[in-house]
Figure 1 (cartoon, rainbow, N blue to C red):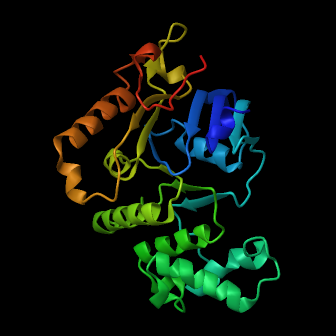
Figure 2 (figure 1 turned 180 degrees about the horizontal axis):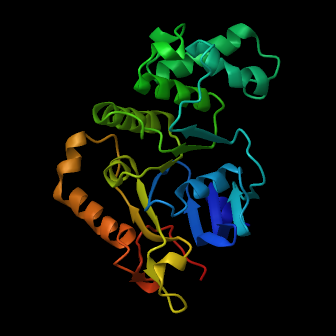
Length: 289
């Protein structure tokens, strides 16, 4: 346990399947506090399953999933989650939506916090997501991007140790999506967040992440050469130099080269890397098998 406690999140030799089909196979992952881990992979490879395991919404069939050295057994406020579909109640104002969690969970452990204290705390997070002007509006009065920012404030007010995001910008138009990417990077820097960000977009993953993880069922080992029968493994794990970079960085040759390499190695069912050839260059990457 001593080694696991050095990392906020620690998965070791994790397997997960449904109805006799293995989805995730031998997942080994350590995430440090303050990392922005972007997760990509072909459809059906288990990206959302990985997120649900860290959330505690599901349990592994075998292996360990721990946060701060303690096994995860169920969801709790230490893990916040933002989905593609906005989690706002339509009959509540933006402010009331953000206040909802602390009203039931308490504010910093204080379940007797006054309404004024809850309001001030909610307004702080609305200011951080630049929605203080919309506090008294209802969700249907907001654009899609504004609704997602409100959902992020709704999650952050519980002060989770890790923010889990499952395709949070997938329903937005390209311009709004890029604006939200820049916004999220600025928020990550200013609040020193730890984020696990699941996306189908390789460009988005490479832009927002400090670390790029690719899951894939397309590989071969000494026991199975038929990719359709494989559970997904982490086949790429890259460190990414990161700050809230200008979007023009997406046009840089090294950015495009990384996207093309990961797309080939992780997304192409005709290219089956051997497990010994996986590019696991991140310093925290490890394999138990």
